[in-house]
Image (spheres, rainbow, N blue to C red):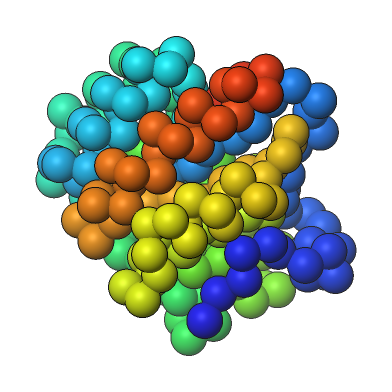
Length: 203
């Protein structure tokens, strides 16, 4: 179960997090759970084709396994963010252990940006994290991780809802690669025709 658009009341409850960016001419693609040896190069190549920049929230375990991909992301002009080391859920993890997992990722990914896995955080965890990081959420989730969703629905979830300032959540993972091949170029083309620029989230 997921929500395509993050309700305003949730954004207000967690107002210390960034859900969208005030912009009239830019839109923000983000990719979670990589880097992945097949999906990440595909994303980077498509972004390059459209002169688009994005933000990659990397899992520490994956970044440690694929350091060259991390460097490729950075060299290509994108930003990178901390997505924890082992992808724990904040709701079921003790705060001390959760923060330790995030800090372990920081040893590999030195970034001021953090996105919680599943978007799940306890207030105690958030209070500690906002003192050290810019916590980035999203306002549009296309559902590329849902097996039952078609690639066409994933595309329309973005194009029917995202607008200037939106932070869009996608995944550069093995399970999403087939949908990425279809969705990402169409999203890039769609918003290019609207005159919006794809930018990376600044630290």
